[in-house]
Length: 422
Image 1 (cartoon, helix red, strand yellow):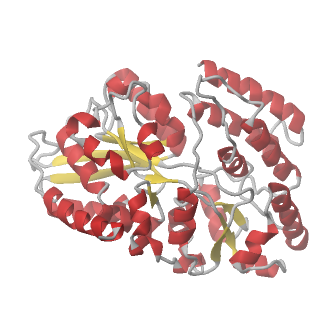
Image 2 (tube, one colour):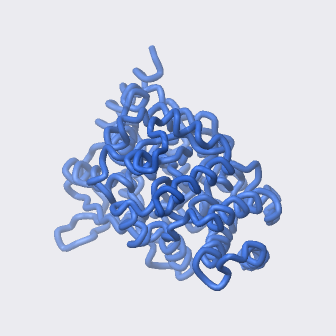
Image 3 (cartoon, rainbow, N blue to C red):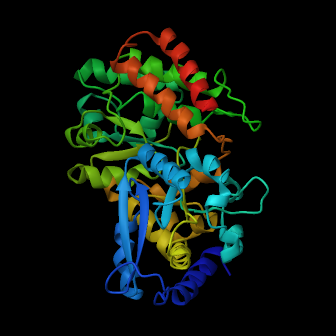
């Protein structure tokens, strides 16, 4: 039997077993229904699945609480310290998961719920990322991974006299220096900005380095990967390529609609954000290879804080959500690539093309990047450290450090050291 056939059969069987009426005794409302509050950011594809789960489980209501990326993680940390107020299910990004797995006692150990049966489905490094250091507690079930490509506006490239076919576009930028040179050509011909933000160059370049902010001894290593990534981002900013739009801000979202930039680093999950933010640009986007090749940016986990009142029902929902049928639907709707590699062989993913992105073979593109990933160790303080360095890059682009790349790097090191010691 082919692996894809096995996955589809397993999906059908498990869906039947898991689509059962919720029976938790913890009431979430006057009608006796359990309300599961889920905190996340961006687009996890939950809008599309919420109604189906509620229809199959009439005793359960799903409350979706989306927010800003950093703020959601900061809020979760505050609630864990306070001992109350955390959601029933909390999404955690790869950049913060090691920080939170170090507080495994604050989360339900999903191994106690039977999650160990799913370990073999996951990419080994993905399963490991949310496992406590002693291997005794699994705090999260992986959703997606963020293998990298570049999304670009083929119509804006055409206006600038640049190639538009994805293979020819990929050939424009085998290196980041070549990418910046292409951006200078674009801005010189159009007078418009090429990229959305320097931070969104910093992150993918960092994701391609052997070591990120921290090594496995939790030692801050700014002179390695972070310096390489900072220099590339600073060079792009200095070349005048950046529209200086903070990711996930209202201005950034408007930039997609108005064509304020022509290209951006595009992990798989970015597809959904572009589609939802600028639906009228359908067919104007395409997807090319990323300079330098490889790398990972993002990819999340769903966790159950212990302080929740609906733990059993929350786990039932998580278990349903990670089944192949739901994971494939999320990929097709919003682009989030599953972290279960057997699904890459399923024709529903392997053969999927996205008309929004010029019928790009996104199943092949992102599955290929995923299979070649060698992820970094991110460190317990990776999330806050990344935020601290991004803030300095933003100051380089538009604040008191504008045009002072050497001073900005000194400041970035200082702020990263503060974040590491907090």
